[in-house]
Length: 281
Image 1 (cartoon, rainbow, N blue to C red):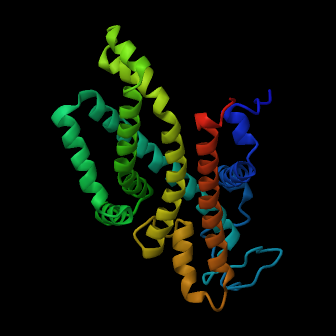
Image 2: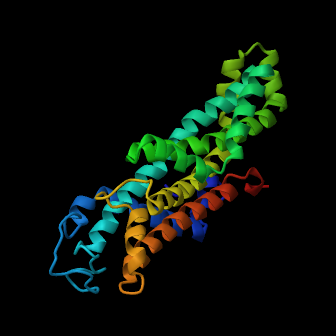
Image 3: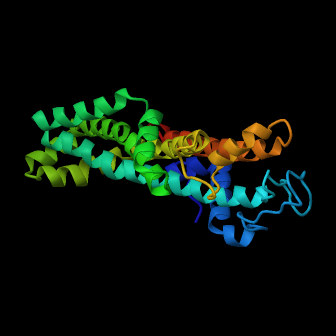
């Protein structure tokens, strides 16, 4: 069944940028899920007779300084990118949304404490918080997800609180409160569902930020460590060879660019599609 053009889904599917973004995300997700079948070589296989070879039918993106196939490493790196984007944003939502709702529901000094803690975390740049946590807790995939997810919590908590406060002031919420609806039920049944649109948009944009942050952590050496290939550590290892084998830097760079662009395009299209002012008059 095709969504009507005047619905949110219809407006989303009619936006060319959304179609492009979704297509790129699905393609990279398919590579991540089917990596075992798509990779031409094992990412740890070293062929010392084929060091830094140019693109060919056998190695479509050439090989690195250890003779490893670049395309296979790029495909396996997509798994880390997708896992980090989903895991970090999921963690941020799981912690940030309840904190924002608790601040509005409980109010008073609890609201002040939660928001002041969030403000204290926001003072530090998100990348710096992620670097500090990753350096302190180790360089595993789980640590990277935790580091980026914690850095996202304050933004999602503040957004949730602002949206919940705006919805709480509406007449239908006041009517439900007068009718005897408990604060928890009021929050879960009336306020949260009507605050989801900006949270969905922010989460989509946050996935792009998570991919970019993971690449930055990998590039400076505090992300997921080799031999596990990630787009960030591929860039780090290829940087000294930029003049000799530029494809080693171009391939992961383009992959990062396309995935981040796709998430941002989808988030931008979602913002327009979920805007009630864009609906039928």
